[in-house]
Image (cartoon, rainbow over all chains, first blue to last red; front, side, top):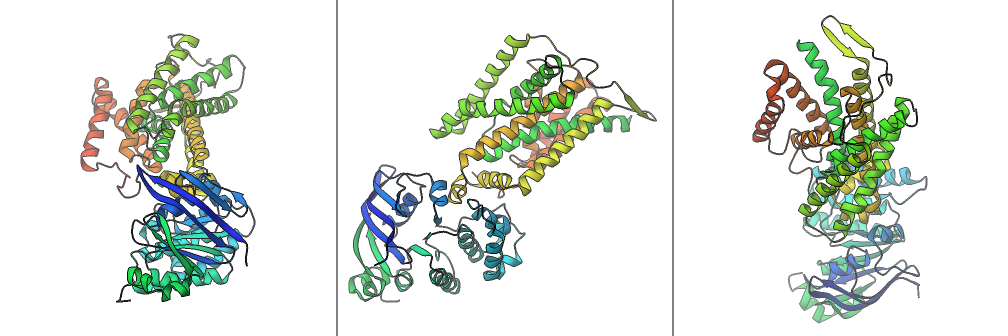
Length: 239
Length: 293
């Protein structure tokens, strides 16, 4: 069994006066892809935002790569190698595509940044064509590619993706999941939050189902895809 | 007369632009109006004056001292007047009031230290040379003020476009949240912003002190208001806009005095400001989508 890269233990987060995450525990093993699925408002994004340091936990611990990072500021979490692609593909709109990518490597001091940039522009030719344009002028799909590419510039040990397919046309959703599988193939550990449960379960080695701030089920992606209750609750008969 | 006024507008505009740059920079990054910017400007002028009169420094070294001193004052200002409010998520108005308070304190301190009278750089600080071309007169001081202001503005633009910290500053100006997810230490960028902004204010303080041969604890108030007009005219938080508007305001003022009346100096300038804002409410170069909270 692989070692645990990320261990979340009894994590609790308040959202205003509401406890949005009510003591959840899960493990992401090094090299694996783990997904959190659940309905809108189940606490998925709140969980990711707490791990990444955007929100402060009300209790519990987060251990990353053997270090207790509970309550760390977001920039320190990123510098440690745990990088989040936020929901809603938040690019730095007034900055150029190239500047967005450069700032993705903000925490790096090595000499291979230019090389990585060339590789990412090579992988996303649309971004290469628009490298000197403002990121805000890109289409939704291009912005999502930029947000993912920017996160990869940090050379993350663990990449957290928050609803990467949200609001995208089906053909772009397919692109996003294709990129996720490429990132997996390169050995990067992934924690994926998705509403598109079927695609997420197919991509994941292991999955947790979140309901009202607690984990109600877990299992391999393949096992949950067979689970009739999951199918009924999240996949729908139409899928 | 036209060419003479143009020359006057150019050097005065360069000082306004330099002052407004730092002003707009803080607004862009923090979304607050730092109304103590004029007080920092005034302290910069005194730092420069002290370096010349007490330490017998040449003016170029005194300018560096003034920028460094004002820059550090800016960091202290942030620590005392803004950072505690930021940590408590205080509303923007609280920060504005806090900056007015800080401004009042800084002016009082200057009054206590230097008295209320007008001080001057010694006459031999710079050679009193005058260049003439036909009817146009321009002093060496004006030439130097104009040239060095342009160099500082170019340096700032280059810093914002090319340097790692400058890019991070623009990132934080757009979104502190995204920036922190990229590993940018937002607090450190804010400190850098205050330092750079205040150093530019300090430099413009020395320049205006030199050009008008007058330094007093109260010299910050008029330029504070003009700077505010300039950054609104240029588009809040917009760096090239502040430069353009600085020159524009100076030109309106100078030509207004020359062709209408010196009684209406500020009235003319502010009338133009209001007219421009009626046509372009977000400023000359301001766009509603480029910046957001």
